[in-house]
Length: 314
Image (cartoon, rainbow, N blue to C red):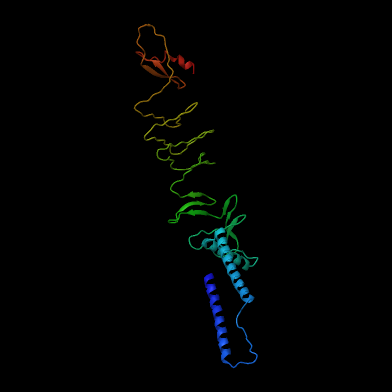
C-alpha cells in the first residue's frame, strides 16, 4: 500500500511538472509583454509536505485500527456461534421492548441456527408457563438454583424412537415403562408402604437379598408363596425360633434324606450291663407330649419310655 501511495504521489508530481512546462512554452510563443505574470499551478512547499504527512497519518491510523480489531476478536474469542447468540439476544430484547407492559413478554417461538444448542439463561431461575385461552395456568416448568419443578396434571418422559412412555406421573400413580429399573445407590430402594410385584429377580450371577435390618420381613399371598432354588440350596436361618405352621393343612417334607441335627439323646440303665457292649449306632426317634423330639438308643423293643426323662427338662 505504501508503494502504491508513493507511485501515485510521483505521478502527481510529474503531471505538475508537465503542466508547468506546457505553460512555459505557451508563454514563449505568445508575444512578450512588458511585465509578464506567472501563475504557478499545483501544491508546493510546506503544503505538499503537510499533505504527505496527513496521508501517512491516515494510513498509520488505518493499520492501528485493523490491528486493534483483530486483537479484540482474538481476545474475546469471537466465533460465528457467538455472533448468532448476540443476534438472538438482540431480537429477544427487541420483542421485549415492543410488547406492552401488561402483556406476557415472551416471544411466540425461539429457535437456534444450525446444530448449536439453544440456551436460556437467568440470574435467578427460568420459568416456562402454559396457559389456556382464558389465561389460566395449565402447566409450569421452573429451573432454579436448588431444584427443577414441574407443575401439571400429568408429567411424561417419552423415548426418541417411537414415542414410547418411559416415565409418567399423575395424582393417582407413577408408571415406569422402561425395560429395566436399576437402583445403583448403596442404600438400595426404600419404600414407605407396601410393594406389589409379580416377579422379583436378581441380575445374572448375582444374589437376591431381601432384608429388614431392624424389623420383621413379611411376605403374604392369598393363594400361596413359593420359594424355589433351581440350581442351589435354600437356607432359612434365625437367631431364636423358626416356626413352620399350617392352620388347616399339613407340613410335608419330601426328600431322599431328611436330617435332624443336634437332637438330644436320652439314656436308660440296662438290666444287664456289659463292659464289652458294642458302640451304639442306631437310635430311635421319640417325641415328648409337647412335641419335642429326642433320640433314644434302639433296642429289641421301643426304648422311648425308658429314656423319657429328657421330657422333664423341657
